[in-house]
Length: 192
Image 1: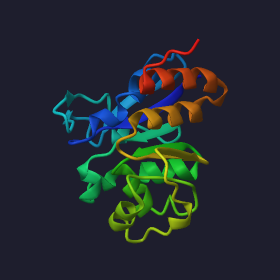
Image 2 (image 1 turned 45 degrees about the horizontal axis):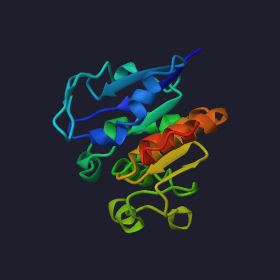
Image 3 (image 1 turned 90 degrees about the horizontal axis):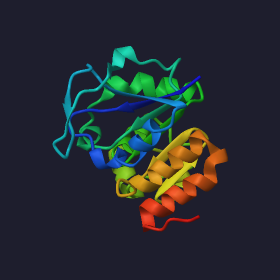
Image 4 (image 1 turned 120 degrees about the vertical axis):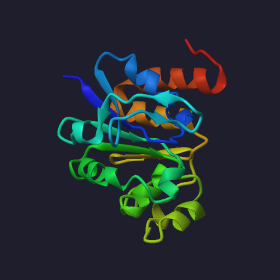
């Protein structure tokens, strides 16, 4: 059975933050990648890409999903996108993976999902400023990307590290292949 990967899109999402993970997931035959927006209507990325998601929020389900990917964007900082909260919380309650980068990490902090797991974001003071109820200081890690339990987080300038953390979470047995991929895309080095 294919693993279902949900990627949330919204007006102003940071398109580069999912630019490395999206094609890697799509080329694997054991993953089904579904792009969704709150209403299923087209969205425009921060870079101006017009994208037609394949589903609406109402058409995706925690029960069938294995991973939820949340790209960043200013909408998170403005307190928008609350409609996706039930899906985020449902995924974590069922022990399913949630991956957030840049501004999306602030929503996980606001939902108190980072208080007891190792995590990162753009910088600690940013996370504390955007989530006043955040209590996870002691679990904050100064790193490009962090995966702990079923939560994956990354700073906004680390889309390659974010992709690597997601791929490793999905299939730890492929770590060698994933490391080769990372070396190629991060450093331009192909390892035999």
